Length: 148
Image (tube, rainbow, N blue to C red; front, side, top):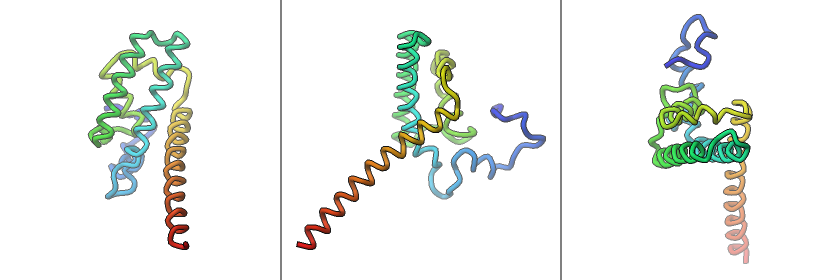
């Protein structure tokens, strides 16, 4: 598979460098990208809906992309979405979607990779913050009960 940055190096980076860039930087833990992948999929669904509202995607294309993203979401939930062999989860998801529908090529319209990364990361952190606050509230309640 040709890498996005394939012409940037005189020699192929080592497997360790490729693994690190693909999110496998905290071995033996799973790829960190696998934690972000569900949020990435949500962001792509919302972006596809906006593209359809703006007339860039047809309703049929939106349906095809959404179905493919929902299938990817199911695979991600089962830890079966293929991340290895790709530069990162963005490349893996793009390859997956491109195999499912040609309409996936339009999903890049109106945003950059940096926009996608920032939005995905923000969504992930918002979800984690909500979970943290809920856990903290449970802890405070337990401490209050113990103190009484």
